[in-house]
Image (cartoon, rainbow, N blue to C red; front, side):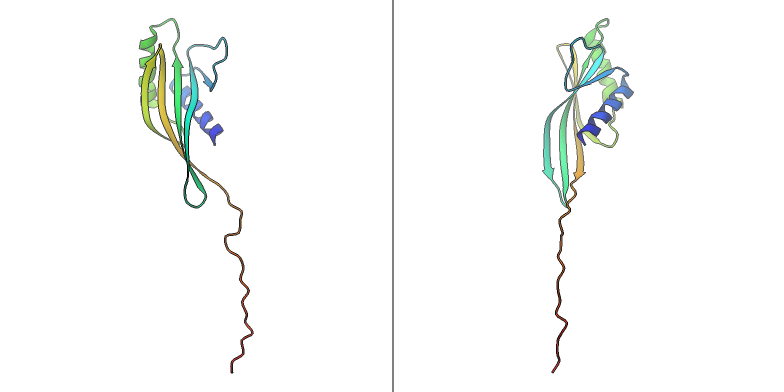
Length: 135
């Protein structure tokens, strides 16, 4: 499910701003402008009937192009992200923006549920004695 979440976040970011998206690691000589997607906390919990509820905290960092004013570009991208960014098949909540050292941090939480298949037998067969004699 995490792979699908990464893929859908990447697609959502590219829909807002078509630039390179890195996942969890920035390589040397990375291209700017670009996004970096980082998961920094996960809260799993059990639901009913084998369901697993998860809440994942995500930090999307935006590294602006160096030819423009970096803070101005960060605010413009942040405005676009807060208005247009969507992740297909997942629920996003708690959107937040901040700029640290000329890098935009777009923070949000993603909630999703998984179903854990349980193949164990819930009930067993019962043998019933039908040889009852009436007197």
